[in-house]
Image (cartoon, rainbow, N blue to C red; front, side, top):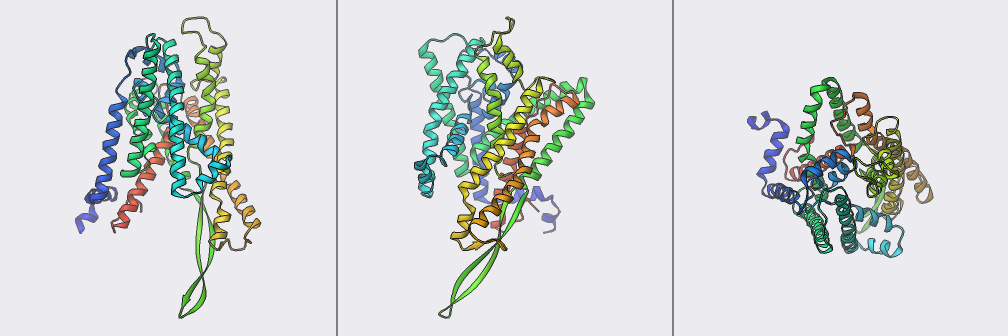
Length: 439
């Protein structure tokens, strides 16, 4: 007993997790699926010029953002080059369409069967989105001389391979969700970001040779970002709720009251607003890249648009991209938060379950009160996400470190997935009377 208590808490919790057959099987299954994904991410499509692709990534920072969603597969232009990004796009589209289209809204309210049908529609929508994105990537890389000219049959084969790679990665993510630990799609993205840490360390080594002080300050800012993400991910406002329930004793009915609370998260929408706003700010650059003159040629209008919407742009040009990123994130946070809370219908749930907020009348007053609280705490969540979005730009300008590429979206994904996975493991350990990770 003394030996068990003398071990560090985290180490002891990990040992306890591996002692449980069910939890050990889930952890090993998740690791196996990640290994399978990394193998697929290194299976390149034929005819890809690796050196030209590397130079293209150095010139176009927007590709690095898409590479993050592909789990690092785009950098090798493998069969899984699009990763889960088409599926994320389809999921976002469905989230926006469900409250608007009555038929989809009715399906979503059919319980487990309705959620399954919505999920199937999302999967079918992923296929054409993946085909369009795959074809666009091939045309773009063909213009940049990364892949050689291909005949129509070869082009169709490559697009089909990329669509199949995307659906395979989505399938791996769903297997992780069902048989492993954590949200599978998030785990796939998490694995790709973590796999790029070695590249980040290599960039830091290059920066240390010329700007060691700036690199140290850059690291402090990165640690502060991680701590801030943890704080705002866990922060919530508790709304007290009183329930009046009836029980039968000795053939008579008695009224009893129960108390609980509704935890309203400060950041209730996670990273979705960042994905929305990032997709918009990089869209002009991606479209312009199809019409821009190749490197070495005279710049045209498309080249100038690419320079304006370039995340690597320095001041004062960088204000356009990052300022738009900040404002869009702020607006999308409020927009998506309202959609989420309308779908949850908290006032209706309270009324159906016989609950009420002390001091607030059920009905219209409850709706107004909850909307008032949500609007106030959403300001904190929106400012947090907006500041996180532009922190890499601020850190780069302050420290003058240009080599290291820090992604605020990547930090939020890594921290959020780590916390969610740890909570699921914590629940499994506590349920079996083991001491968990969280004190």
